[in-house]
Image (cartoon, rainbow, N blue to C red; front, side, top):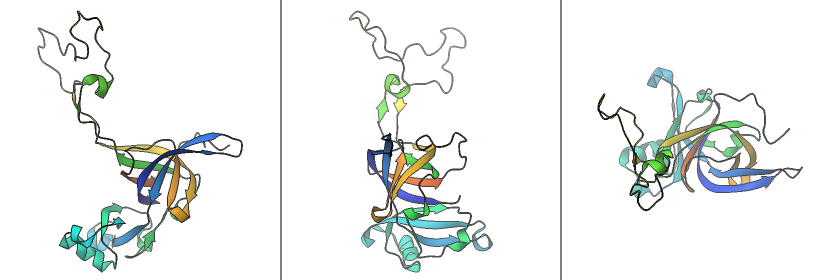
Length: 218
């Protein structure tokens, strides 16, 4: 991984190119993140950089976490993540990672948690079709048949059924950064990303760049 940062999703907007093309974008308040620890292969068995994001009251932090913040000479931070950078040795505790590490045109993978919808039926969860709408039907949004009535006389595993919907980690890959505002720590990403407004997301340099080229800039 070459680049990564933690941020909060602010919402969606749109920007215009010079030829008048409208680009739907998601605005992310990205960083700044503070480097708390640099792990090495000799000491920890692998290399990575531990970073923190978003200040929090000291009274909300437990003693082990508070100790690592003090070692890094950092204020207490709400979110902590590890990134396996290719150049981990170039970082040291106390360094700041800002949105300036990215550039316009970079391709990124964005990870977040989708909006939780609770326990839902099969129509909302899986897109099943409704039953007959007539009054005499008495079966409008039910699940329908689950299995054969004789053999094997059981419901197979992985059958799509009602249940918990949403609140799961999702990654959308190969998105494009179309604008960066360093003064406001804002990154504008073309298209939508997972999660509701104000949710925490992780932006990483993509692992596999598409060969299609830019959709917005020719």
